Image 1 (cartoon, rainbow, N blue to C red):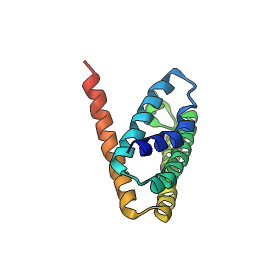
Image 2: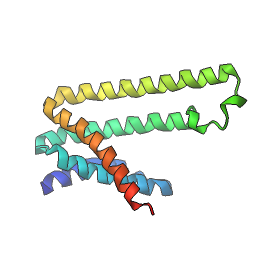
Image 3: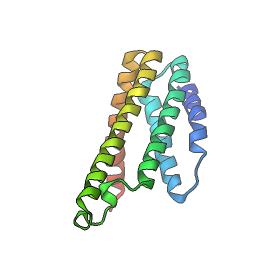
Image 4: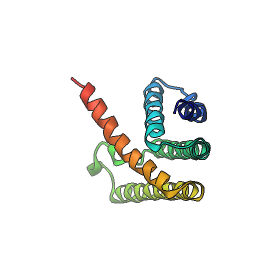
Length: 148
């Protein structure tokens, strides 16, 4: 199991080493925790780990780029102060653009599902998707419990 953890960190290291901002330290901590979590939950063989982690890292990189693009274009409604101050066409553009980014995220998910499916047993992929969901819940719970 130690070898698998080491392999996981070696494959993930390039992604973790790209810290640029103070907030990146927290993201790096979360990603490190996620890698450890996935390593434990997936129970990958050494051969499966060699296949899984590069695909995972590529997926994370593309997903991060898409989210960064979305943030730069300020398409999210959360970033708009008041909808009432926008014209109808501006609101419609925001909605359509939001749909576009959601579709691109879905297409990215499908692309990497196909890559995983072509390379790994389906049960490993099922464990990965389950681990993704349980990780989110555990992370939320972990941060909620830290608050006063």
